Amino acid sequence: MARKLLLTHIDVPGIQTFEVYRQKGGYRAVEKALKTLTPDDVVEEVKKSGLRGRGGAGFPTGMKWSFLAKPEGVPRYLVCNADESEPGTFKDRFLMTHIPHALIEGMIVSSYALGANTSYIYVRGEMMPQIRILERAIAEAKNAGFLGKNILGSGYDLELYVQPGGGAYICGEETALLESLEGKRGNPRIKPPFPAVSGLYNCPTVVNNVESIAATVPIINDGGEEYAKIGIERSTGTKLISAGGNINKPGVYEIELGLPVEEFIYSDEYCGGIAGGKRLKAVVAGGSSVPILPANLILKTLKGDSRLMTYESLADGGFQSGTMLGSGGFIVFDEDQCIVRNTWNFTRFYHHESCGQCSPCREGTGWMEKVLHKIEHGHGAFSDIDLLVDVSKKIEGNTICPLGDAAAWPVASAIRHFRDEFEWHVTHGQEAQTRNYGLAHYADPLEPVA
Amino acid sequence: MLSVKENEPVVFTDEMLGKFAEIVARYPEGRQKSALLPILHEVQAQYGWLSVPAMDSVAAYLELEPIEVYEVATFYTMFFLKPQGKFVLEVCRTGPCCLVGAERIMKHIETRLGVKEGEVTPDGLFSWRGVECLAACGYGPVLQIGPEYTFYENLTAESIDKLIEDLKDKAAAGSR
View (cartoon, helix red, strand yellow):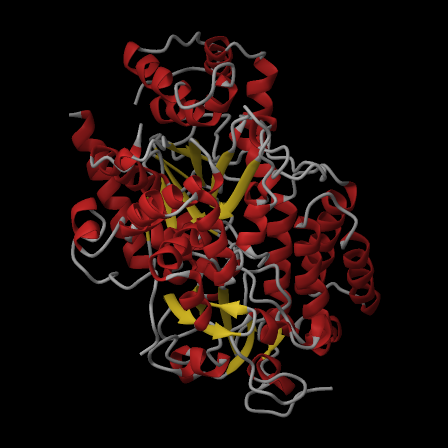
């Protein structure tokens, strides 16, 4: 059995409550940090752990923390990004629903490390039930003396609040999130200045994903070096993967980084194989923004190595033949799914969610949606496929925030790997309305396509 | 749920004002604008949507210009700027849910309720719309119903029919 650090006690009845969580060893990390470690010690442990941001970007958390400016007399803030909105991703919802105290404990440890006395958990507004769960957990922790003034007699004060969003994917981008937390539209800010220097209310701020913050608990309990022993190379520790789509066992799984993708898809311990005995066509491995890969390339790299669930292995081959671990939103497509229709769907999503600040994104996503709609509905031309590639290239890299890239990559990768399916939609416009293209060359197990 | 009409002035109850004060206390002095989204959620939970007079009253309460409230209310998709059915069925329409049949579910809801996306049923009980990813991709197809945002997962035509009947019963019980 794989080691679990975040979901160890997931099956314990009542683990949502402070009492049971505490009985199972909860809040030991707070005691250890506040009583035996300095804030800098905590930062050091997180650096040693090699923990990388679990929201999608994979930036080393300890390094992000060490960039935090500390001018005298200016408050510092920790803001937890619980705006989980990346299609395919539902791990943070799972963690907050079932083990809310893991996040609260992580928030206390992390806030202490950063010297924040007020911290916010920004939860997407649709997760109202989770907001209520977190508010209850905060009240319990405060009641037990783990929040408020002079926590455990350490002299450290912390207040923790939950903030609801309003239904905007863009607020998962950290500067848009801060704008939203200030009561404004979620328009991303131009960087620099980075939030570490000027974030919430123009004060130094760290924004971290739910899972990253929860991971600081086992890191402090066991030490950063122990955490770093799990995983491979620069992909240390465990990761929550939310698996959905056409699989037998959709759900949230905690894996040790380094698990082979093939095992994750087919093993009964995880996804349990493709639903209905069908064959695998494609996978979006890290949330809708990362490049889609056909079956042969998700199972093996172009070099023929077994593809692993790590930041490095999934990215092997760059965007030509690789993808990204991203947020861990693992979407599986069976042989009966239409890549063109899904690409149109994802593009509609990005068009809907573009904040509208930058014209390449605002206009480009709209154009891509229209052109994809045309192809999907049997009215496309060959030139439309090239037009999509052209528009996607003109969005990529030309926007304030990464939403533009996130909209461009799925389109570019779908055409890169499934061009014949797009062309078939053009040549067989009518037929494409009644049946799907099927597997063609993407079937497993096949040799990689050069 | 309190009712509010298009141009009716809105005066918040003491209970609501108490909640607002609790929310404003979460932020540093002078940063009460941060309370805008949480307060708009409270107002929508009370009235079912955000009328212009309701937004104006929020602006007055938070000492903001009305435009500061309008621009936020129009940006975030959770806020309704016109009256809705008592129950708004919001169905996830994004990729992962479509892989497991969300499009069929939306079609079924449309047929069952007899109204198009965004319209209200003649009895005022229901409206529905497709929304973007609700972060529940492993349990799709899914829908949510505010203001509690209760989740209904692994939807089928049968479970939709039952849900609609249950909500009708709930409404009938509430009005007795």
